[in-house]
Length: 464
Image 1 (cartoon, rainbow, N blue to C red):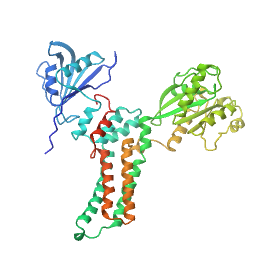
Image 2: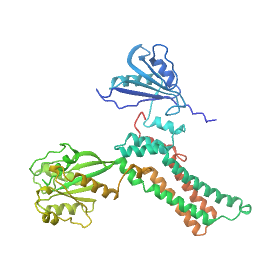
Image 3: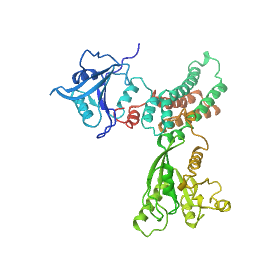
Image 4: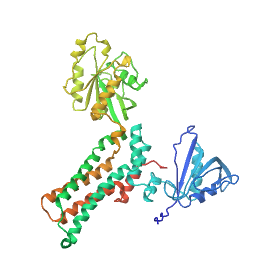
């Protein structure tokens, strides 16, 4: 028999984004033991509509105290345990905008519901056993996904693939711990411990942990994206590159050097990865105070970028100004973009333009004619991973919290391996085995503290 779901106060929140004159539908979500009772007070369904689970009712929302009609709406009913939180859940599907949903929310609060905290609906789904912690975090990743690849990776997490892999690792560690503790408690009644077999099991677990840990950087890249700064001397085509790449006129382009006075941003998806492009002010000695401020700001932002595109003018070649900029950013990941290649008449001129570092990637573009953008994107993907990024390669993609826990498990298991090699007593093996088991349990939520839960779910949006 399933354990009964603990009764908690009924919570309510607006579950859709609201903005003036935007959105045709707004949803107010309520979960808890009193959710249906509150809905019956506020919602009037004409005719003989049945208040059964997983039914949608049509009707009107009224303020109980004044009997004033508030909105025409639909009511969605989901009774425990067949709901997102495994509690009784009702949703008012109101007209969009601000006023309708705000009034319905206020009526629910006046009827006894409490305003939900960020992520509280998903927290209840976790506490009630519907989701493990990796699935809950994947839901937040799906809501915040900035690319199809990121969304696909989040869906894999929601399906439980990461949790399954972690549980298998934890089960293997528990099996080893059981073998060791059995020898400690019943040494005389059992055959000697097969240390070679234990070491083989540990080696396999460590290899699997390392394999999952290797997805951390790629997973973070899909979640947060890549910041790419375009730098170079004035009038080399930085703003034109931004416009051609983003297929927009985000940046003002003129023949006058110093037109860009501040950083201009654009968002793109390249190879499934969200990329924020930063067009910076041309770097030079400026007498104009406003331009100088823009240059200083651009320099600071470019230094914090994940990747720098050093752009030069092919018709001019490598200049002293280019060298100065290269010296400023040579410690950052760099790609040399040789723009205006259409202005070069002979192959010898093109061959004469060489990157200042032998291993520095070089891309030739003529952005005025939309040439070279595809080559630039390929160079960026190669700079990131030296290979193709596809959802098939990212079935598992852990986040920073999960990576930290896995790293602690890895360190503990390596210590167990060292303990065995040094011939220490079995009691010493169990200490680090328990540490590894606890760290792995933190990933799925089998070992978790209230403060950790607060930290995780505080990053969720209200209503989810």
